[in-house]
Length: 111
Length: 112
Image (cartoon, rainbow over all chains, first blue to last red; front, top):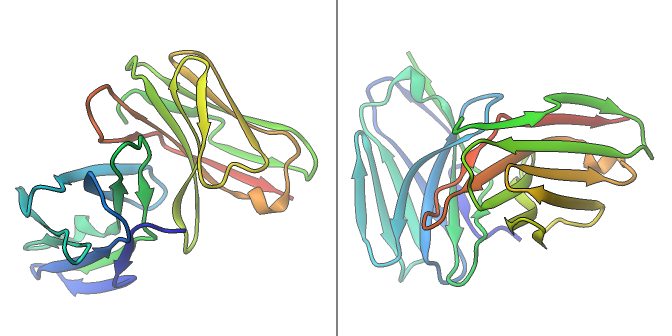
């Protein structure tokens, strides 16, 4: 069963707007990661946030983590057409080498 | 793509035939993973390896076997391919002390 579930499944915005995607998970985690996948390509790691962190930034990306609600959000500010892709959250539990991926959010940024 | 290659990139095969997919890395990383990606399911872990000859099952391992005789190569075998194994297969690696995974370009497998 999926550990992480993204919301919304699809998002369409205008270039320059902000995009927010959410991820919910079910069990305790060691860390949560976000990945991007362009059409026909492999996944690319974006950012990792550990269970003892609440917020993290990387360029135009801002990730928050609320372990009490078992949820995370990814904010992409000032979106560009090149941000068009699918975005996945993935969680790793303590004492596990495995990542469990959600089903993803498809983001379309219209020029 | 972090020194990861997959071969073949595309394959069409018939039901009941054996198929082997290869993942090759040049990073000397310890951990390697095989996933499948299907619409509506995200990525699901098939098998993973934590060292040469050390492998373990993921969440969708039925019908698949793996082998790792060298650090750089991780093979995924479908002993008798079925139409339900039509999918895109991704290999990934992580290094020691890191949780970030780096993915190969994928193999699109069609079983007719």
